[in-house]
Length: 377
Image 1 (tube, helix red, strand yellow):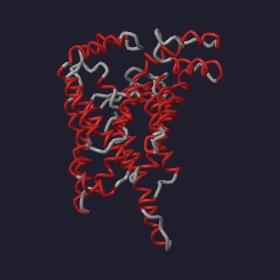
Image 2: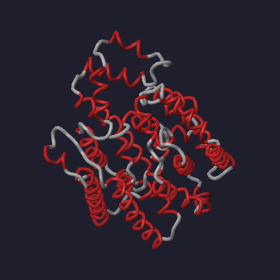
Image 3: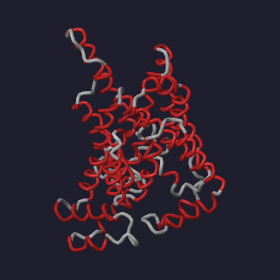
Image 4: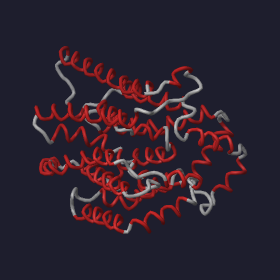
């Protein structure tokens, strides 16, 4: 756990450094960029996520990493083998396999280089959007860690890569570039098919927050809970045709999504609902999209409580990342100045507690870190 803890410490240190530098400039310069226009310097953003990406790419045995390594080593190096993987009836991730074959053919057959490359391609989109959209880049990065979103880069990296690609083009949702966005989703689906959930949810995300479409979505979730058995059974049938085919027995033992996680994920949409009048006056189109994404995330997680956790618990990642932008915004805009400070402190303590509960038995394994790989929290 020491590796993961160091990522949080690193974010805090850089955040403090950035604040001190800004305060220094305020004392020496007449003009200071307004907060609403301020962006964290690119070098600090790179340092922040570069440290996380480094450790993610250096791993060799965390969670399902060994399975991915085995898959990579089993892929051919011949380009002539690529067409056989584009049979969707037998393979649900032809894009990911094609990338891996091309990587082995042109770049390296070393899985360390492969893992590092995917870590970079997954982490940079998150960094770029947080730097562009979040008013509090370092707090958003802090939530990325303490909300355990970062762990998707270690366990479920293929799905997280697909989520990061779609997140990179989130501006297109705001600009209603429906066709281009759908094309991106379809391309990302060749990496992980579950990203297709973004197609119907696009229309929920672009609706008015807490409006009719959002309420209809919540009603449909409740119906799904009522008819849960056939619903989950259908998902298991789908899963048996994917890369998870050998894991259904393990998933069947899962009791579903942890209720604590559901409560944590419900905090953001609840705050948004309570402050909806303030948010309506702000009329920030992207924040409205984030609100709907947050509601979708909490709703799917709620549904996951009643499932075996096979698939439903994996879907929220496509929506959860929007909370990284939304929650700091809500804490700032929906409360008075003094209340905002208190809420930031409470959320910080709460997410640190959540992080500890979720990660206390975690471990980190790398062939390059020696004794550190054996330390546990």
